[in-house]
Length: 390
Image (tube, rainbow, N blue to C red):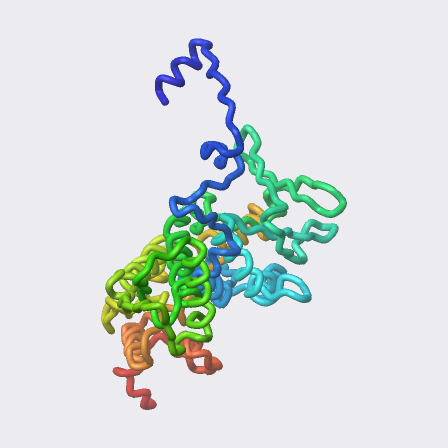
């Protein structure tokens, strides 16, 4: 690379290289790089892999279900009366909830690298609704100063939008996890296709047929076709009849001998690494214990969800809040339910916070989704105060 830069600085122009459509180097021009197994991986067939479908739905549905709220930086109070509170917490348009939009855009980013929604505004420039855009119809452009713009294709033609009018959720590096892990996904698809072929096309009983006299190619073809017709698929296990001195020798083949079981488990672990999801969250429990499963659940928030939630919070603030409002307000996701363990541990933690004066009774009741009490805003330790009149 350094040598190429030197040649460019000296005025040498690189020689144009002609590529045919069958040349492997030409695939990168169209954004499709073939895998070693020869299987092209895209959103459609990648979601047919159970581990991929589980990871995509787990991340997108969890992010959608977590409530997003607008807070005041000064007193940490929720600004439920602000116009954008409805867009991030309740509904983005009359037929789409805020939860549904987050789920769809996160899934778009996981499968294509980017998720987009159009912000519609009133005459005063205030945001009114959000509408999901097909990622295939959006092209991101960048000015010389780095400011992004978005060119969207509509039925009436293309239109250029400012970055403030497009809510943009981007996967790491702008590349979908299914693209980064296409080799692992392709191998999982290969395993599925192979084992499916074994059970769909394998004759029953399985083995080798030998004959006393030599058979020509046509006779062998007819014998094989007859065997599969009578002992394959739904006829598996039917009684076999052989003539002309033929003999049948069964061949034992197990998935354990071929290490299929372990290889398929390893593909689940590889896909979990691509999506940065703990394997136990994809129901790969071969190495799961009670303790490490609970720890992996906490890691799911810290490692998997937290970067996505930060991207969502900034995308909301960038498009729905003015620069002046961003200095006073901020968007944050409430993750209390996600981080809650069992009821006993939750009660113990609330009790400790209450006794040390870190939380009031009403704050504890809010965490338990209970109505506040008129006498619940006192930080006094209830375990040391008798409350007796003087």
